[in-house]
Length: 236
Image 1 (cartoon, rainbow, N blue to C red):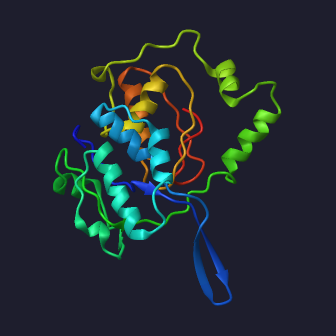
Image 2: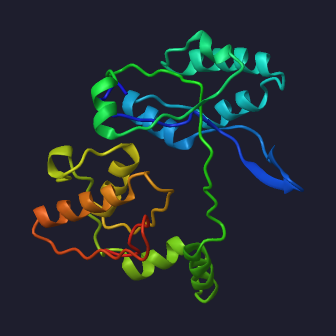
Image 3: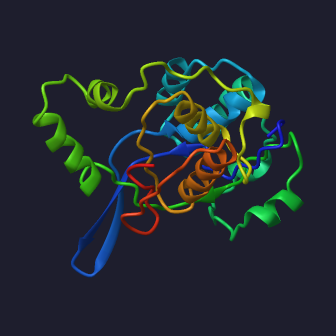
């Protein structure tokens, strides 16, 4: 990104379902294409640009079902809304696997302000509805006389006087922050409670380390809990 943030993310995502019929596996689409919210958030933060996500989603839903026409129209939408370098490879009828990637390698080979669109494909299982944490929150919500979990957290955990938004020089992370991690750190510094979930490799453990270092640098105590590998602690 133009602010030096390294990002490797799909620009579009689509829900799919894998089914087995006799000896064959079939991959079927279950819903329409959607913009990747993580990419939109990072882009808006880096370029300080207001993005009408509702209107952008409408444009995506109106794209043709024909593969070639879809890619032609998508190119037009990208040119009108983002500063992304496009290439003719998008029109080739082939998809490449997402390459092995490490932060140190990417920082060395990526160039600031140069966002390129590649024909990579990533298949991931990111179902959240049935996980243990969601079920626990539903049970907690059902047992309390509050309209939402936000109201419940405010009642029990909100500070009497929220801190003001700290300036950048008042933050003390030990690792670089992307847009979503910085947003989480700022909310915690303001005395707000939040839950963060995500698939492996999205920076949960890095965010924990930054929160801990920030609190320790300010002479405060912190306690982290890791219920399972790859999951952020439920409390600090």
